[in-house]
Length: 219
Image (tube, rainbow, N blue to C red; front, side, top):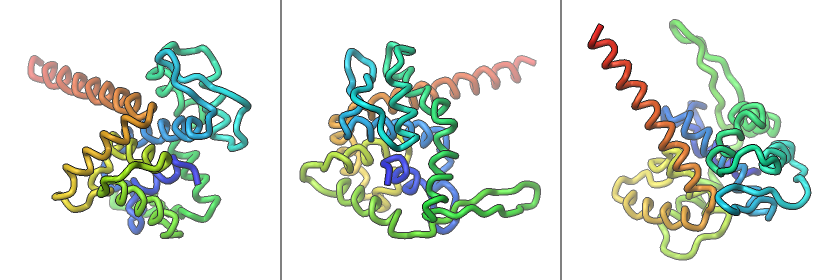
């Protein structure tokens, strides 16, 4: 299973089939980072000169192949710009990953009619598919030992994807979990880029909200 698929599963309520929070935009950025992280673990991407550089042949997985092709182009000089392009390059990170998990019978798809709208739900059909990465990341967040590379990427991206409450459900454990996320981030080159993109996105949204309030007040 792809790291991005594991991260997406962590972000879903397994029974309700909806996000555990309202941070869809943050999670999409995290998923994009997870695809780059997967390539980095395979030695197919390196961070050099402030940008991601594709290396070696394209991977077989179609999503990873598209990201690899994107990073092979000298379109953006900085890693932040490259990361922002991943969602478009793969044709939508969220729908592509969800469709893939549905094809694997890991997720279902259900349309629930509410009073004035329809909610699409993706309940987890194979609990172990979510429980295994959840167990790994919770052990990593609670532990004090070194971090296995793949789990480190997952833990590092769970933080900016606003999944702290998932990996540390007990509030008393969250301070330590944050320290472990920081440690994992230092080991994961793509994680700081994800954090920066999300921070800039949130700052832009806050600025737009301020302008809207000011405009409304002056009208």
